[in-house]
Length: 90
Image (cartoon, rainbow, N blue to C red; front, side, top):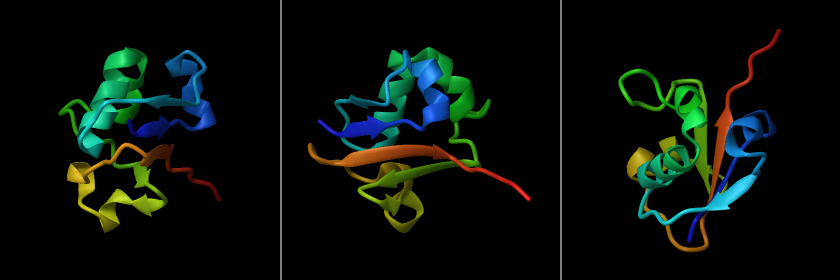
């Protein structure tokens, strides 16, 4: 099963887990499985239309999903999906 990793700031909403295994064929299914398991994450990951928030980045095996097939990026059993909120500063 693919493994989904969370940033430290999101662990609070995921029972202090830093990663979980999910049964998913693609990135969209993986993220929805995580949100189904930890509903408190939904507000932080998805906007009111159910789309991934624009400040949220998703990587599969180190590659941003923008460089792959977006939310439809296929996943294999050993894949690592990393959820990461953008940070701004000045």
